[in-house]
Image (tube, rainbow over all chains, first blue to last red; front, side, top):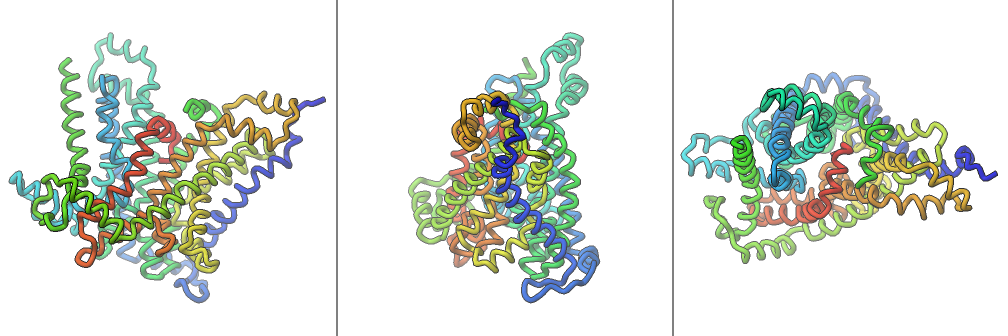
Length: 301
Length: 272
């Protein structure tokens, strides 16, 4: 019988699976464990690491730069939820079902093609003292031209969140549009006939049915904002005097600028714990996609 | 009807506002450092100055060599990751590896850790093995970072292909490798392309890894672009820096424009 009992292919299966598993174990899991170990040492990048227990964690939580960074990261998460998610939804809702709607979304998608570093360069140019924004404010006669946008905390963090939002809205709008397209038309029509419209139609019908998209957008926004690095490192390097650092920048600065590898590892671990906790929100959904709802999602592409 | 007009007006105004930074980028990349007095940032530039800025980017900065390195990374690493990811998906779904989901989960969890959690050992390891600041070292690390996500997409894709395809191929006498190479790989071109595009964009735009793991020879464009900013005075000046920012954004912008449909599919998958 040529019954193709798949169990006959276990050895072949391992030949295919082996390289991937091996690489991930060697290059990702072992480094993770090693970073945990380093966080318990006084390693400076040279010599041998000495075990010092939880000292780095004590130092970390007493370090004003770290506490500021933690606070800034929280501001980033909240800011990213309010501005890019909220505006992404607005743009999606306004363009959805509108003739030429996909064209009207293009201005919001263009920034997505830029890297974090390029955005940092452009917005440095806009927000620097005497930069494009100051000149525009002077020209329009609006007060604020003398503001040092990037030098005062927490204003510099807010400004950088806006720069990052400028990029993020288009993608979120796109994800919300996909969600809006998947909402069945009949209940909406029924609600419309019953007299619901505008804001009421949105809050009672559309918003609840958008939940799957919202979960993804919110989950992604939280995780990505927790890991913020590029824009801050490009625009302020976390300064002045470390007031605009995020956890990602603090980890980099502690480790690679101050050679405090142990402390940097401790920051990395805290960042990882927070990120993983946040990831669980949408990770569960992501993993079930392959089993049920999203089977054909890639297949259609 | 009125609400329609309001929607057009709101979207139009917002859209114009959104394009202002792009306008500033283009306008000031098209000015010479001489005419760039610092007080005329909103006026338009001209093409001749833009062209001389482009030449300045290639003759006075390292961006040219960075573009070479970035191109290599953004093509080679995603290809390796896509193939290895397809291996994983094939083993788990088609060959029904025992405890396949557990092993898949082990691979997938690689995307969960922030890079900060692994980068110190990578830095030490590459410094000790001579892989630091080498093209090969960067290709290896980018391939591995991109692997879990490719495995995730390819597993999803293969789970949508009927099992009878595999059974029929076995009956026809094909061996497992032939089935993968001749049947499953050609069937999954669209998924492979989605993964490739997303990962190529990610590699091209990477800043954190290349900042830590390279110094000069193997340095791609993003850390080089960032470094142009700090060199005011002795550096190339803002108009050339903006031109460089524009130039390094063109490849991803082109990729994005030509493959928007793929991007949308990929976005729905959640990583970006």
